[in-house]
Structure formats: C-alpha cells, structure tokens
Image (cartoon, rainbow, N blue to C red; front, side, top):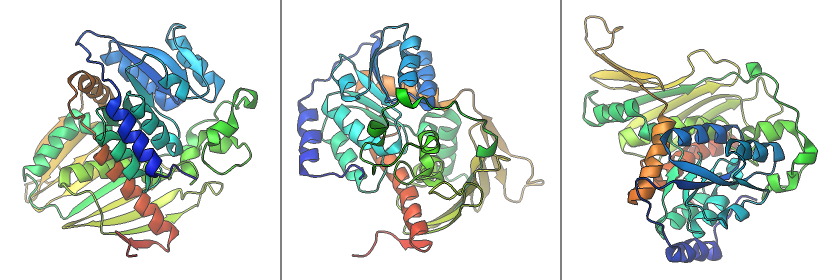
Amino acid sequence: MPFQPNRRSFIIAGGFTALASTKVLGANDKIRIGVIGAGGRMGNLLDCADKVGPCEIVAVSDVYAPHRDAVKERSDGVATTHVEYREVLDKDIDAVIIASPDHWHVRMAVDALSAGKDVYLEKPVTHTIEEGAALTHAVRSGRQILQCGMQQRSWTHFRDAVDLIQGGSLGRVPQVRTYWWQNYLRGGRAKPVDTQALDWKLWLGSAPDQPFSEEKFYRWRWFWNFGGGAMTDLCTHWIDVVHWAMKADQPRDVQMLGDKYIFEQWDCPDTVQAAFRYPGFDVVYEGMMASSIDDGGLEFRGTEATLKINRSSFSVYREGAQSNQNPVLKEESFRDGTISHMQNFFECMRTRKEPNAPVEAGVAAARAGQIANLAYRRNGQITWPQKP
C-alpha cells in the first residue's frame, strides 16, 4: 500500500520538524548533501548541484549496490554508503536530494523533514492523491525548505513566458495544448541487473510483494504500484506550467483515452489523450511512447496571440499578423533549468525564503495526472472533486 497519512504521521511530521534546528548557512558554506535514490536521474541532479555549489556528498542510500558505488566514486570516496535511507538522515547533513521511485517519495520526504533536513524532491512529489495532505502538512508545520522537482519554475524563458501570459499579451486564453512524445523502442538495452547486489524486498517497500522483474526495476514509472505512467511522469511538468501561468490548479472535469498498443507488459497506457476542464479554460495532453518526433511542449492559444514553448525556447505568434507563420517575439534558453532550480534550492537553504516550486505546486501538478489516471480506470471520465 502507498504511504497513508494518519494521526501519528501528522504528529511526527509536525512535532519533530518544528523542534528540529535549522542551520544558518553563509554564502560560502559548503552544503552537505545526502543522496536518497541514486539511479540515472540522481546523476543529472548531482551534475547540476556541482555547477552551483559549493556542496559535498556526505552519504548515499540506494537498494542497488552499483548505484551506491557510483555516487561514492564521484564523491572521491568520501560518501558513506547505506541500503537503508534512514541511516542517511542520521548523518550531519544540511539537505537530502530524493530521486527514488514515486511510491517512496512522501515517506522519505516526511522522514527527512522530521529529521530537520531540507529536501529536494523529484516529481511527481506524491504517488497518490491522498498523500498530498501529509506532505503539505509536513512542510507547512515546520521550518524546513522543500523544493519540488518542477524545474520549469526556475527556467528563465518559462518565467518570461508566464509573465507575458499573466500580463495579458495573448488576450484571453481559453485553450492550452500540451504534448510529449518519446520513443522507448530506441533507447537501447539497459545493463542486466545483478540481483545479488539488489535488495528487491526493500525496493518494493509498501508495494505488494511480487517477484523480481527487470522491466519493473528499470521502467517502474509504467506500473501502478510504483508510478503513474505518462500522466505523472511527463504531463506533470506541463500541467504545472499551465497551473502557474493560468493561476488555477484543480480541474473540474477530466477525460482520458489510453491504450497499450506497443508495450502490453506495462500497467499504464503507452498511447494517451487527455482533456482537462478548468474554470474558464480547457487543457489537452497527448503523447505516445514509440515516437519522438516533435518531443514535448505547450501551446497557449489566446484571442490575440498564441505562445508556443518547449525546453529550448518560446515563440509568440500574433493573430492577424501579415504572416502568422513568423513569430513576433522569440526567446531561447541559455542553460538547463534544472541548474537554476538547484541554485534556487541552495539559495533558499541560506535565506530560508520560499522556493520557486513550493509543495502546493508539486502536489497540485501530481494530482492532475492522478485524477486523469482515475478517469482512465473508471471508463474514461471523472468529475472532481468526486461526490460522496
């Protein structure tokens, strides 16, 4: 079962965190980091941390030994290695970076906050809708910083685009189109898993007991016990930008059409079309996992202009322009927004200010995808909130 909030978890999250001491870091202090979940995404996050330091890896936890060893090596042998993540929380560290499978996110984050650590938590920050209340309470009842891994919120051209939308440059925006196509058929074969170096039972955690599966170990996002498919892996990023730009974060009605045409072994559909109705505007998302042409992006379609944006740039096209094929405004990205997002996290650790991606934003973005998944599993449509 996923982490379920109860009275005891609220007491732990609220009481212990409130008592935890918050170290005041100076501008030149080296931030001491604990790593929890040391797979591929963690490597990307640590690369970004290195670019905006100063920081050092003190300890690493992962249930797979090669992952632990890789982080220890990049720390020049300094980092201690652990199978159990709670041992990392006992170390003299300032923050943890969590990039575990989704079904571990809230439990690990709540424990880290209770231990007085600041947290960078990969998206989606929750695995179920119910977990949102526990995570939000854990953050807001204490003094720790939690940055959700919604890096668009620190990405310069996304921030500028949101300013344009909120400033009325597009006119009224009744429709937003989002999309993300990836190709899992061309990703190459992952290294075989050394099962002797893996604690599979601990990897499962609160998930139902089941035999080891290499497909689940590497592609856990596509199985309901551990992730939520495209809607919480990919759509979560884009719907967060929509929530941010449009100042609305809860859909009223959701429809989802999903199919398993290519990867029949998965729980989650590999081909998806979803529609969200918010107060005053609609959002559509589409994607599939066996075609990567056009990659991912968003289109904010307004009565005066349309803004198209992806991770490299945005362009604005004016209605009635002599040639609406040519943008009237374009801005390109100058660096990966994850670097800026990690920099914002480190700055907030020092200033104790609110991070760019606060817990409410992360919970709302995850919730939208989770509602869509509920619609998929309930004949394709759902009204939210559900009637008792």
